[in-house]
Length: 362
Image 1 (spheres, rainbow, N blue to C red):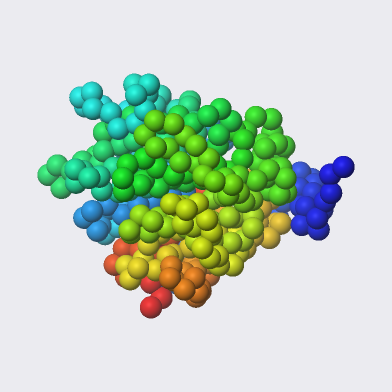
Image 2: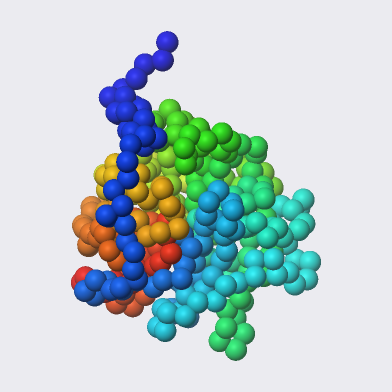
């Protein structure tokens, strides 16, 4: 007999409300105007994750698919100085060098659906971008980031496809080669409104995810670690420690990847993605959505979501936290990633048409 805890009972009630009732259109964000010093950069598509490139100026952005694949995703560049955008060709190939699995021989189709991304320097000093792809295939795509005459581009270098039913969220490269990735829940099939059955069960705490390790040949689960809705993943500069965001559990887990054990944890409300700040702290995008926010934002993922988010600074040694800022409503809510560039913070979102630029509060 299945037992239900209070959170799951409340979750079932919330899910029922999500599928019924009216939407408050008055909360919609309808323009692209700044609010004080918070400036929206419009013309984007669900810019869920981003990484700062080696010039310290250019961001590479993961633009997710929209409308369940009716609108394909893409990888793009953002110039943090002049706010210009360049869409990259994710199918560009040069030569036959491959960094992924031996049996992955062709680049992704036009249907790219990027999610989490991770930039790292390889042992040969070349820059590697790992991209979670939910498109035609579920895979981690490997790209080489190149630069010529001051312009960045990407070359496809292979992929690694996981076992059937895997559904990734985020990924990090390992210094010795290989990667680790968060698996949220089984690959979605049937829908419950705008959600899949698998995602609905995960959001109710019935479908825990885990961590996967690819050693260059095969994927394996990492120990017995599991949690509800594993989301963003980050790795320490020395490559020994992972920081795993459990969105539904409202925790960031500090994890020894060699011993596959939890070292410590921090309580952060619904943590999404995590990036390193200029002074060696972790910047965590934290969600605090109301039921109205969720209904409004899921009703049209092409529009900016007003849902409240916070930027939390996390000390990786002590796991102490400090709130840097909070934001809801116009010009953008629902931040999923926070990337520092000098004295500015650039915030992406899993919904909408914009990136938010905010002065660093310190």
